Length: 351
Image (cartoon, rainbow, N blue to C red; front, side, top):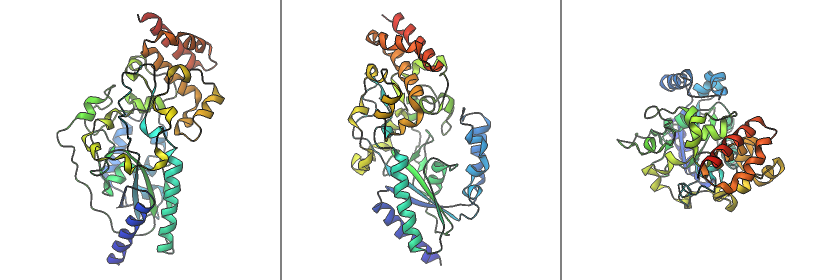
């Protein structure tokens, strides 16, 4: 039985590669006390910010069997989106907005889920009677800790998964199954004494290595946070208008990540690599939906996106943006209008 499970696991890994996954590993679906305790501590300290769903479904998130009691194994997978260009190249280009690498191509939810379903169908055909469920970032699943348990990498000091072969540029997905598959060997944490990711964070969102306070994380603030951003943090956003790549971009392990490994669907759209703030600030709802059709950015909606662009405009020092910003002070959305007033005051003050 063990040999059969190991054989199926090996063939599964081959099929995963054929489906475009860069990494594949297997972990038990049983509860893990340490993993559960870390999640409870993170939520208990309020580090999840306004992501209330983290607290609401804590038991389901803490263990795969909490979500699906019949699950026996978790197949953890990662698909590469390694960039061909330097993610930090626009750091000083204040007239342009910076969009996280992962959001410059097709929406990963759609791409990864399609491949997960294909892999799950293959598994059921190979093991008749097996039941499966697939997940891509839309259910109470701890993809990163499960990925670590499945041996596809380790959670680095920036809390993201690090693969020794593919770095951190990985979209993660999971297949829960009733099959009792042979687990993979775990990876050894190889961060060592390096703290490049911690030092690179513009907002000091890491209170300690391996701990993230989402309330200070630029990815959280520009994507998940719905209201006004704390004024003390706005200047630190710089020209980042959707997500942040800084802690990943400086990780030494990403030198092993090759753009050739990335899926074609994740190649950046030209108009999203270095978008001009002046053009983005002119977007109405219809224009926003058209520009970001098929992009994960569409999920946050026009108002939150324009809020982000206004913070970037206020940090730009570019007085040519004043007319666009001034027009948005009368925006129907109160958060957008307040961000516009803040940006306008900054632009009129700067020489």
